[in-house]
Structure formats: C-alpha cells, structure tokens
Image (tube, rainbow, N blue to C red; front, side):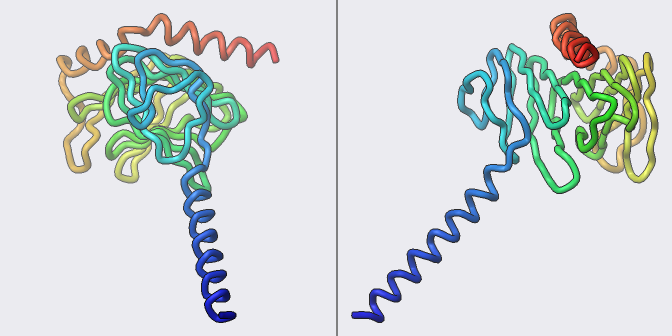
Length: 210
C-alpha cells in the first residue's frame, strides 16, 4: 500500500514538474498588442492590450496592429502582414514573413531586431530611430525615416541612415537588388503610411516629453 502511494506521489510530482516546465517555456512575454483592426493572434481575435508571448503569430488582414515591446520599442504592422515573435537571452526578434511594418526605437533601448528571410535588421545603438520594412516575393525594402538601421546578411552589414532606402533579396544565395518594378510593389504595401507614422510620431513625441 505504501509503495503504491509512494508511486502515485512520484507520478503526480513528475507530472506537475513537467506541466510547470512546459508552461514556463511557453509563456515568455515579448510585449503587448495594444490596438488592432482585422488582426489575429495564432488565429484568434485578440482583445485590446493582449499580451504577446514568445512564439506567437500575428496576422493582419485589411487592417493595422500596434505592438509595444520591451524598453519602449514599438511596431505598427500594416495590412496583409504576417509576423511572429520570439524572445531569447539577447533580444526580442520579430520575424516578418510578408507585408510591411513600421518601427520606433528609443535611443537608449537595446535587444530588438527584425528578421526577414536571410536578412536581419536591428536599429543601430545610440540613435532614436523611425523606420519601415516591407517584404514581398523574396525582396525586402528598408527605409530609415530617422536614426539608423543596420541591414545584416551573410556576415556583411550595411547602414541605412535618415532619408535612405535600400532593397535587398531575402533568400540566402539570391543576388542583390531587385528592379524598380519590385520597389514600386513594395511601396504599395504601406497603404496606411499616414496612420502608421501618426501613431509612431505620437509615441516618439510623448517619449521625448517624458
């Protein structure tokens, strides 16, 4: 009887330990979805101020989504955009699969980057940065509205400074810059640009006043 109770106790203890371990592994927060329209998180319609967890997938249809991350970083995802989020020991990574996003990065903040295929784009340290990324058909367009963005691919780093735009292929092994037609298509992904920069501009102004 005692052996049976002991065995049952050990089984419960192991089960609880595994449950807690899995729960802790799956609930690492990366930020919050503050507001959204026509967006889903892992296929579910989110409420305002929904916590975003590491590994979750955010999809925006014909709408917009405002995401807050650690240390004052902000992102606005435009229509027809698909992205996921991951936290590790060094940074929060937003993986852009398709579509367009705008980002705001405070001067003193660290630990934030955007992945798009084979390309990684972190804001450069020491700058307050406003930027946009648009990805479609294996091409990524990166624009710095303010500050500096770093475009990293295959060990090389290119800085995009205020007012500059570059277009780069995202799959590994593909050749450089797509043609003008692709750039025009990418620009059309930001059909809500005025709203996006109104939101990000308000965030930047509020941060400056604070």
